[in-house]
Image (tube, helix red, strand yellow):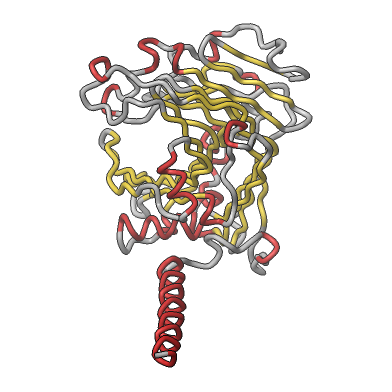
Length: 366
């Protein structure tokens, strides 16, 4: 009997080790070099390549994008466009645009800030020497408590981002090879993130939301997103294929937090409804990069979290899973943003500090 129990114990141990090994294999199966664990210190610059670094400049203010999701344009702070080196503030769907504040002098809500703009529903503060911005949104103060974010077929919520938009740079079209993936070895993004306040307890009246609305509860989630658009090599025009490669660093919903801690994709959408374009959303989590969730104070967090992500291999994996066997080198790096998306009466306030993007080229693109 004792020998039998010993054999069962040994076989149990063997099966457990085999199971863990299989889980580990499946978790990393197909992942390319550098997608999660490879740090900048482990990457050498190819002999024919070079490095390009885009950091937040120390300027008085940043250009601010329009709230209209169908219009891509700078709505205010245009005087800083050239000096911003592509960095700006993006706001979508907020019915009280930051541009409505005509006095950028800081108030008591942002002590020591170099510039500030705020409305009833949003705030943007900047400390230029610290390369830091504060962003907040309050959907509960919007019409109908923000319970109508799914209008016109766009299921996204109210958005506030610190973004790098290279399309406002003079060389984006003139020096296109600088932005083509075929010339890139790696793309690193780094930033510090601090969750200050999250409120998501509000629930909308189901009778007062759009018929196509997916959620009625308040939702807060934040992520870093890199965007890539395919350029047809024959016509040199966009094909309509676009990937939003997102890395989720916080979601107030407990079920999604479980997914983050398990290293699971929160979702993969290969044909997101976005007018006539073939857009895909491919989302990883910070845990897959071995990095922590940025919890707010109510969850025992509220401190600064330092992030570094190596983007290129994950982006290529997303393209392969959604679009099949196409050349990822024909995609153009069209932007990067960090920030929040809230829905249905939610509130989110956070800070971002010292963001930078580093591209390591496999050859000098000129």
